[in-house]
Length: 290
Length: 192
Image (cartoon, each protein chain N blue to C red):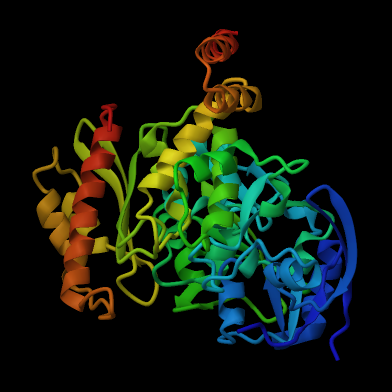
């Protein structure tokens, strides 16, 4: 099938984009890479009346450090994040995660901010950004707002983006250089949506494992933070507590059942992803080869 | 009802200017507006890869790209691989190694292979496998496609077209001395 007719706008500046979006109200939809939106439009599951394309907004094409945060603009494609030395230095978890998103042809057009704005429950990037403590910057004619990832993503494909608003950038706080990290997912084929995936960050100090962040994708309506599991691991020495933590991470989940697996299957896959991610993150924190 | 948009694109080295509906998919623009039917439609949601074209040298899915999104860009489709009636070494290799059966996935495979070999002229089989994971094939089971890309890598890594021509010359000549001479010629080209 082909997309339903729509009116196309390609504003030349951020100001023009925001005033166009304000005028269009809930009839306007932002187009960045289109790698999530176009498939929906081809099946007519989405039929936006107006598309506002940000392709001419060079001012949104940046990866830059800004007051202790790394800011990645709305135009930055996933492939650029993947090969960015700044991202690799600032938050290598993001590089490991983005390499798992789709395939290179998708990443040449799909954007980091677009993935967050789309808020697919199985998407890897929102889960990794949640673990990193990232924020989004929402711009609208009436001004800018910053929200954390869990304030922004409200449900499946549902966000707190205001009418007339545009997700201008994702901001990642600085991470300690010794932080161990890992993203582990399971999918039927490379590039498929994850059945479940886990992001882990942790630090190893003399007193044990600290600053643990464990998040999951594909197991609920939004990315989830496994706070129980994180608490179990605080101050733990070594990997002995990992199986219990992985179990705690999934205990209260009620993952969906679909053609890729039952709820129980998903829960088990998530548990294994958490276990493996913890092991890999620990090895990295201890400076070992992974 | 919806206004047409003027776009200007360079396709296989030729500048093209058209007015298109905003909802016109790039793959339909190439096939129906430009008559370049080498790019195929498989799934229309970006999963199978048969619609793959190169935009400014990078592979993209033309079925989930609007024609308006490539205004001002350069595109290479499968029709742009052969030059002056001569097949690209990758096409030659697919032919030699039977890297296709029905041919439906082949345009996307060829362009993705071109991109892979430009990024990494000397890949391992494993790297080629990973690289073509973006492209689905229902016929071949992929092994011959990998063989073809490995062969293309070898051909392109050396003198490329010249060596292929020398090998063809050697294969076409049945007399002993000429065959030896042709093989020696090929060998010296390899070393240089």
